[in-house]
Length: 219
Image (cartoon, rainbow, N blue to C red; front, side, top):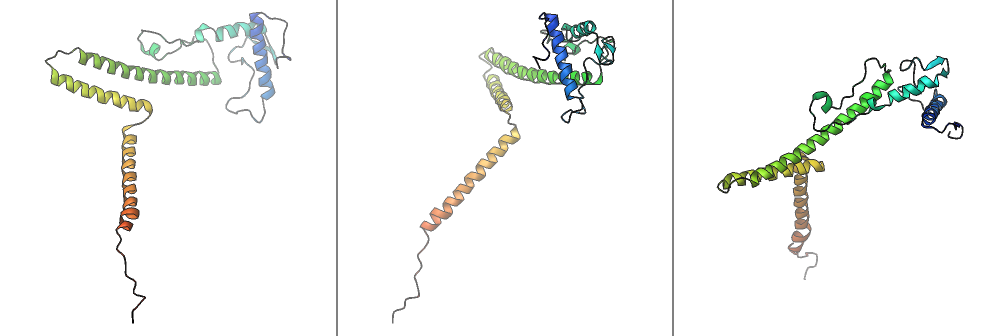
């Protein structure tokens, strides 16, 4: 593909247009193929819904308009940047400000929604882990800074802190309380089974009384 689409323009602008042309050639080759996903058809990018000025005629595109569209579509405004030390519902969720005049087709909206949902899930998991670590750390500091007279409260806090840290440790490994209980029950059942087999094959046979044969009779 690289040999067939090689252009003499080696500038950054030419590289952008070369990648765009290669992408559309692949889509044209795979359009209507058996491997094409009906939910995501291989169409020429950008479509008329995204950039009406990019299409001069059927099968022809205005490279200048396409180049400016690619710069605006994949520019800095479309990059999701996670804010630091900032609050706000929209910024916490990592929402991207999209201009109202940008007309996205259903495929682009679907892909962007999937990407944003994945990013939100990853950030929620990361925040929950960070919050758990902070609670354990702050709890240990609070216990350490208590005065010497509060011995009973200090012991209670230490016990609660150890239980919380142990619970988060098991959650981090992927085990819940139900899984741990099932493992303990299974371990006890296996132990009882081994003891029963040992008693049956070793103890019972060892102390089994001998029987006197009655076949041989003395006359």
